[in-house]
Image (tube, rainbow, N blue to C red; front, side, top):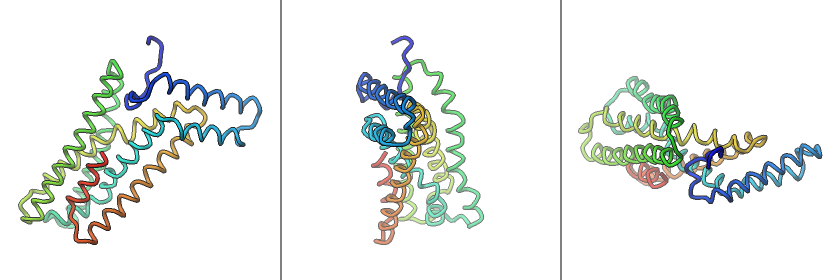
Length: 233
């Protein structure tokens, strides 16, 4: 409708009228706190409870948790290159920067394109396209890791580097940009909303790292760890 602020396309699965009503109740609670001067007591707990029960917030937190597992490969990238390629330690230290470089390119370029799209539907298509790009890159990494394990030295290092940078580029918008803009809708509680969302992401990343470690402890492979990340996306 004209004059109405568009919500995040990922929240299109939620009834917009219900989402607006929940945000309106949250704004009313904050106004009541300002009127009574009690911004840290029970009313604040009520606001946080309403935030946690908000379906759009739950969806956003779930997306952050899943993307955090794939972003964990930023730390695992040097280990992967060490196991699957013939690069030296010095070369791995340099080439492992392709993952944060891909994230940087995504953060700098995708928001400009995203903000110029004419409708929420087109924005949703862009988000799905970037997410699909990351999924395809990770699936390709699974195949490359299996090939490199079966025949060491048969896969050039640049193939791994290309897939890692593409996956990082595809995750940048949904992981870094969208959560920040979504949390702004919570007004005075935007910092609380952002911190709880980041906490969910970090907790999911910890669990993913532990699962990956248990796989390797049982003679698992990189393809298994990558398969877990793909299934979450």
